[in-house]
Image 1 (cartoon, chains in turn yellow, orange):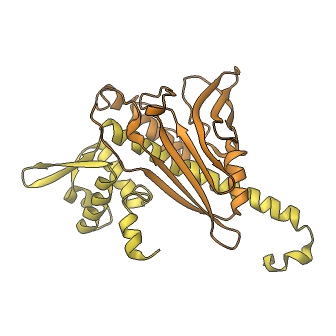
Image 2 (cartoon, rainbow over the protein chains, first blue to last red):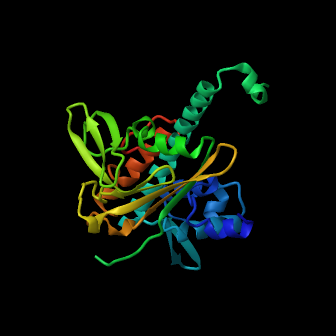
Length: 125
Length: 167
């Protein structure tokens, strides 16, 4: 996948699969904040925070409203957004567990199918 | 309620296991990896999570009393590359088997070479579900979704699950 494609799909593909975005969601869960306030609490620049907020907004996770001259961001608490956020987290965690189970099964089956050390030359350290 | 669409939930994983192993573990081994804390109904001790391996098969959990909760249905069963499930758990945590109120989970397994597999999961049509009347009200307070989600995140990320009312 090209970088451009990856960027285009980023809003849908794993909006919460990024540590900074998860940190932003955690901060917004405590209270609404502006871009500047978020940037002050995170080790990333304001423009980077703005880009992350754009991804989160397109994924339906945050909303913004104007307060004077600045935009204040908050978690989108409409029912659909909350349900979507829940399902996103659920699958993210469930698939990590699935991958671990599948990989353990594959290892066990490979060991079962190739019990002779001479067949495992390329797995030696 | 207005009909409003919402972006599907999409996740991908590259798994160091062959396609057929992935499919088998996903379906037959469902109970070995599904997060045990994810079930509905209070005070139920879940002893099994099952996906019946055929179109029309149920996804259900079984508790220590023998009670079954049917929360999903197999819509497509195409081993070893594709599985589609209907998801019947509504936004108010109730099961409703009405097809007009189900979302759809499509899982595909693609050979990624060298014995690895790309799994892609798309949970779509989430907007079909029933939602609580006022999620921003009582439901969103300590005992509601944000709490449950936070507690769930604590569990999967290896922290002690937070107590209600503690941020």
